[in-house]
Length: 158
Image 1 (cartoon, rainbow, N blue to C red):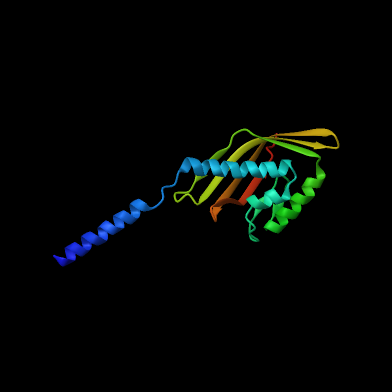
Image 2: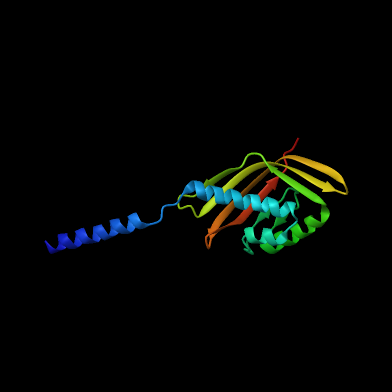
């Protein structure tokens, strides 16, 4: 009888503990991920490496690809240095997200996104339009903030 009572108490405590665990609002998390990606776009448009730094993970083993075949970044430092150089190459940028899709892992601490966007770069007072740029990436929730840990952008072949 004593064993049954202890079992009942342990199961009751376990049920109480599980019911008290925080529920994840997946729509809020997806919205937060979308906001992080939009902030990345904003950092590019504003040529703001500090804002970009807030959104990106500073992993020295991250691997990311840009739109050019030679745009391979093997660390946060390479990504950062490449984008400082890119910011100097254009006067103005506008990124228009057209089709953002966000997905969450089961435990909601990893997310990935896919977007199709149009970019307009102003270089020496001329607008360069790039349509249907495909951008994918992975984010990880670290210290309650979404950080981009992997990203890939590609220009479709015509």
